[in-house]
Each structure stands twice: as structure tokens, then as C-alpha cells.
Image 1 (cartoon, rainbow, N blue to C red):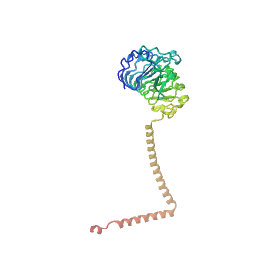
Image 2: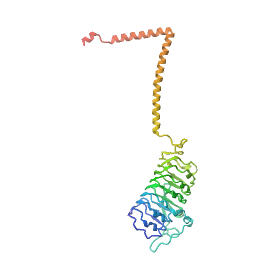
Image 3: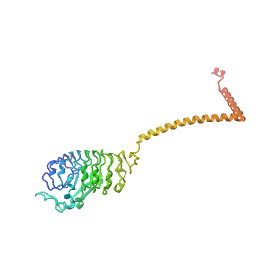
Image 4: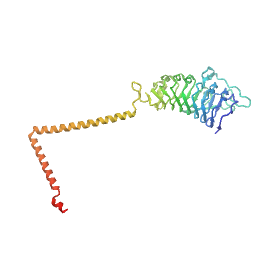
Length: 342
């Protein structure tokens, strides 16, 4: 339930490895002094009310492995240099050096990766749409960016595709535009990629099928078009929910494309076609009824002309029907006497 601005609370903490202020009521922008936290590995600020642009001075934190700024009010474009130092050889987990010793009076992690009281450090992070707690040796191999549920705009920087050691990338629920960078095909260790609920357009790069570690993929509710990636390797496991909400996107597991790669006709057009077909059917009905009626009359006349016995019987029945009708009408008409008595 912490409230207010971040101010200078951690200005003199160069040995700080983890900064987790998630699920509080902090607001304002991220202070510029954060680039002085040269040993920072994990920055978790999710579920607050931070605002402003994602500061580019985060790019100076070349030890940063996990950054979670989700569920805030950040706007503007995504800096192209986030986790920029993650790909250097010095950042390989096997060569990560211990953070420098903290200054007197400041507690910090011990060289074996445990906290000051001997407890293992635990970092919460959401991947594959599920929140996990990472700790121990697994944590040293984990790398990810979560900027979901903000107000970010602009295109996705293609430079993010060169973060070849990243495991999780979540940019969902923003206002991002442009296409999915083809450089994402270089994310060979990525396990979770969520770009849903944005305004992305264009085609899904077919080269993404080469991401053999990918186990969660979602681009739903964008403006993507064309065919879905071929259902091979990991992409054979992704269902319709990964692509839904893109009216111009088609192909398995969505309704298949036609020969031109276009989606099926819109429902409105189908309704109009049905109405046209119904109109044609009614017109044909009236024409066929009239022709059939004429044919029946001509058939009766022909039979009566050829067969004199049936002709005499026909006229006899017509005469009897006319006589019966006459007497029926006469018997039921009121007489002048009865009218006078009324």
C-alpha cells in the first residue's frame, strides 16, 4: 500500500540487484537516477500508477535481465534499447559475476546469490499468461520484458528481435501499430510471445515457425491480414484463440483462405445473395403456375372435343349445376310480400 512518488529513495544503492515495488499505489514517472543502479538485474514495477514515457535511461542498465512495467499508465513509444546489454557475452549466465559489495550499512545479496538472511531471492514474473515465482539457478537464466496493459503507441522496435536470449516478451493491451518485425525470427530462446490487443497490421512473418522453443503465442485482436503461419513444429500446437479477432486473417486453424489468400465473404453479402435468390424463386413460381393453368384448360378442351360422350356429360353437369344454382338463389331471396311486412 505504498503511495506517492519514487523520489530519491534508492539513489545511493549502486549494489541493488532487485527492485520490486509491484502492487502498490506509486505514481509519477520513473526517476532519472535509476540509471545509477548499475548492478540492477530485476526491475518489477507492475500494478502501480506510473506514467510518462518509458525512460531511455533504463538502457544504461546493462545488467538488467527482467523488466516488468505492466499494468501502469506509460505512454509513448517503446525504447529500442531495452535489455540492450542482455546479448553480450558478458551477460551469459555462466559468466555472470557477483555484484559488488554493498557500502557499509546497506544490506545486499551474498556472492552465492542468497539474501542477507540466507534466504534465496524470489522474483515474480508472468510468462505464458501465468504468474511464476523464479528463484535459484533458474532465475539466473531467465530474461524477459513485460510492458502489457499500458498506453504505448508507435511501432515495435525491430531491435528487440536481436535479444536472442530473451525468454518472454509481452506487449499486449497497448495501442501499438505497424507490423510484426521480421527480426523476431531471431528470438531462438523465446518461450512466450504475446502481442494481442493492439492495432498491428500486415502479415505475420512466416519465418516465426522457426522458433522451436515457443510454447505460447498470441496475436489476437489486431488488424493482421493474410495467411496464418504454416502449422508445423510449435505452431501446430496453437489454436484459434491465438489468432481470433483479426477479420482479414485466415488459414488454419481459422477458416481457410481462397486462392488469392482472401478471407471468406462478409455475412452481409451472404444475406443479400439469399434475398436475391428468394426473389428469383417467387418469380419462377408465378410463371410456372400460369403455364400449368393454361395447359390444364387446353387439355380439358382437347379431351371434350375428341370424345363426344364426355362432351355430352360435361355439358349435362354444367346445365345441372347452373339450374341448381338458379333455384338456390330464388329460394333464398326475400319476396316483396315479406319485405312489405317488415
